[in-house]
Image (cartoon, rainbow, N blue to C red; front, side, top):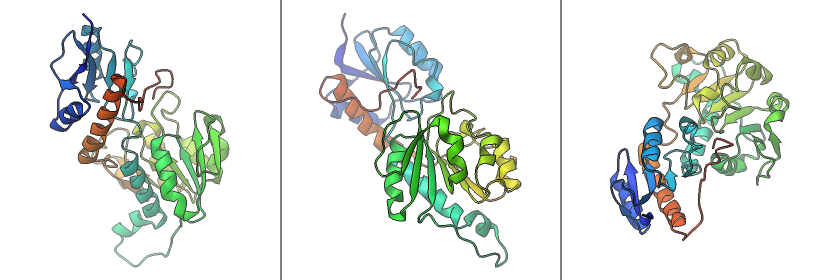
Length: 306
């Protein structure tokens, strides 16, 4: 029996907004059966559940994953299914958060919010600053737009030698060590892969200027947390703003909470309200593509891991 491309399942948990998105695409929401070829998977924390679902339903042709990062699904991506993720969907709020952290660090807000005396006068400006962004996806594209008024000199390090509008230079990951000593701000906006896991260890942090700042709105394990604590407390870098940590959530009493000049936000660059709205749009786009009525958005390349 062939699949019916108008039938879509949502698992393991459905949401009214996602059901409305399926209907808006011209499809119907139904329980999983041998006729269903498209699955909207909503739980990032349950890759084994998704693997079991695909194994039990070999007729599945397309799976929409919920977030931009697909590192949790690395053992699933080689299955014979077309996977799409939400990369690019949350670009606006996440880029906005990265800019917020960068501005706050330059104005030593971590120090000032804890201060009980007048203190030192200090400010680093994004105007004409050297900004290094690691990763070349949708968040980076949006962040470049936000940085344009600051006349920033932007360098992007990415996997592929493809141009990006609004930047001074695009480099490959092999050139990261050459770029780090020149940067005033280093912003991590890349996927978590074998190449980027624990990429920013003490060796990389020591390549940065002692006056430079690190911002991580990507994934926590890209940075070696203990090394970041040392780099902050020893003045190897001037400060850090992180929306993601390793481990996550960051436990109470962890040394990073007490590190010098650090801002920690609890993975709130994009909130549930923002995610649901943006992911609903991605569902509509890709179900249209699944029916042959539009272009795919956010397809996952299993070889690249994003």
